[in-house]
Length: 223
Image (tube, rainbow, N blue to C red; front, side, top):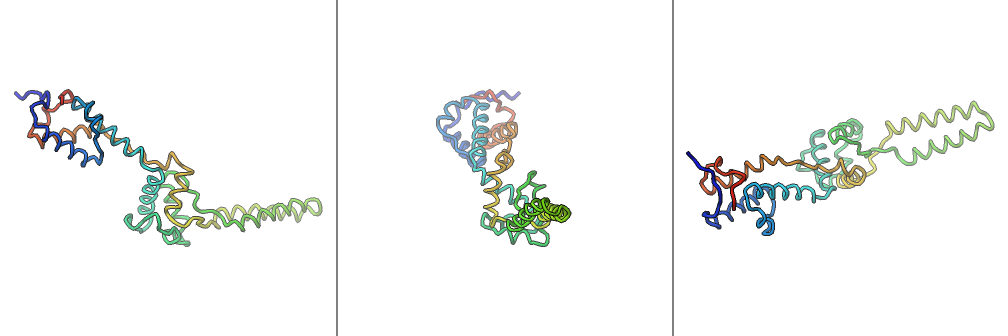
């Protein structure tokens, strides 16, 4: 009957160092000496690795995370290849004018929040606002004309907001900056890690390199 692998004291330290190097490479983390000294059991080592993975994601720039989310959404909705989308990619080329409203609506659905990228031109809004103010003053003189002017101004503002929208940013990077600034929480990917899966992968690495049966390596195994 196989016995539990209780400790690594009889294992060559160089072999353990090799496994730790492979763990760092596999999980894209760096294990410092201070953390390893506190990892006295297999479970505590797995907890250390999990915390390192979470820390790596948490320290990632929000603008960078926003760019990655945006790039995936654009690639899923348009014909653009994901690898071809960079922070310098021009938004006007990615979103042709004739299909812009539909594409942006689908991208925002992919993202799960509004980007407010498309906005009416400033001069259009200014024109209808001035017309509305002038019409309001007209109530002191001829209310019928003033009422018609106010109605036309309100209708014009609504139509400009729905159909007269233009891209007011130049690049994907500009939009990522806007998203991270205006939708900070939603811009972050905040990926969760599966602790059980991490433990399984670490166990497999040790078992393979040290010629052990994975089932023998338990959470209580000591270093």
